[in-house]
Length: 335
Image (cartoon, rainbow, N blue to C red; front, side, top):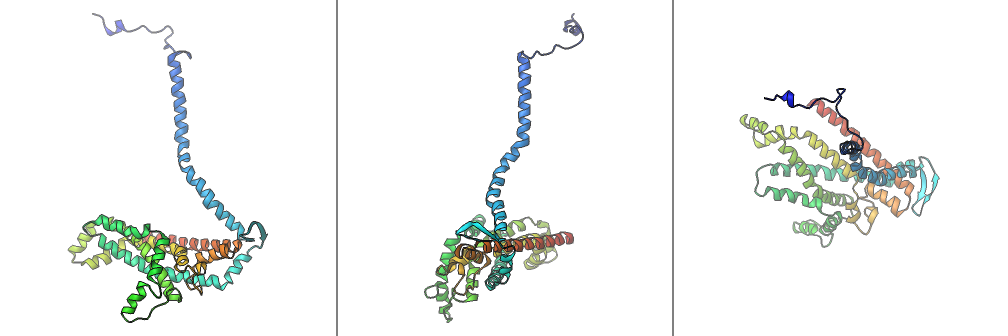
């Protein structure tokens, strides 16, 4: 009976395995595999950069270049009618801004509108999120409905509110007249105008913040609520001692985002009084920094001053970001 050693092929003379010649089919297959392997390595190395390159190209064209150009233009006297004719003035545009009463009026209006719109907005959003956190019928419908104002165009929403706050035929003054209150000139007086503009902002952004709070609430472990209930804590105490402490990072995030958004308010005050436009009312009573920038650059055609205002606003946002970082670090350390 033949054994395995008997039927095994005898080794090649010299003890070496037969090699593949370059012209043989096996050699061509080896070269094809090596070429595909190199191509795969190059693809794995460079394809991620190709995927993200559109973002960097768009950012360079519409973000980085305007930022650098406005920084350079802020050091020159340049007009919109001749943007290539620049006269070096150094920091004169910045010093002129800080001596401008209209700038400080716009900064004060931006601050007051930001406070009037942000504080009630976040408080209402917290209450709505707390209600939506319970089991409700058609909960998906209510959550989608919360985003409807956010998805609405600023122009459409503002024009509707202009009709509501009309002096002679507005629904708000009609309701106030029904309870014996005289009509209010929402577009003529300072505080009524700022309250009206803040109302538009509150209406647009409350649902957005409510969904952010809702997502954070649903991430809180239910064991904390069960332990609090076993200790006899009511729903209100559970909200104060369980929900709010767990939402501190989220609350900080919404406060910072809302503050940044308030510093850039533009469309609502611009369209609230279409007759005055960028002036923000007859006496600039609700002109924000964004409107002041627009008025200097595109109405008065002073691109140098407008660029300086833009960089001043950018510096304000940097300060807000630093404050946010310090508070976040302290919160992480305390937790």
